[in-house]
Image (cartoon, rainbow, N blue to C red; front, side, top):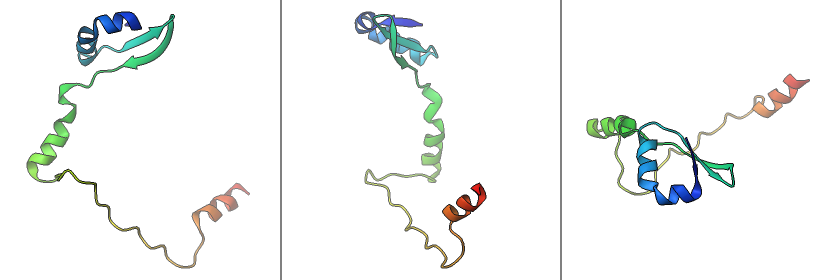
Length: 88
């Protein structure tokens, strides 16, 4: 579906409902495409809800904590050197 910016402003709720229903909306300005609106189906986050319900996933609202970086083994050939050698 194609829609002009002016029409999008006038009927945003209807357009968003169409997008959520699976329609891809192409927004145009002066007959040129400038954006696409793609809906997110209601079931899209079901996997996350399942992980949270089973306790496999939790979030306290803070920044994520990552494991410390792995130390690289001393010696050996670096990946960049292997790529250079492979290129010839």
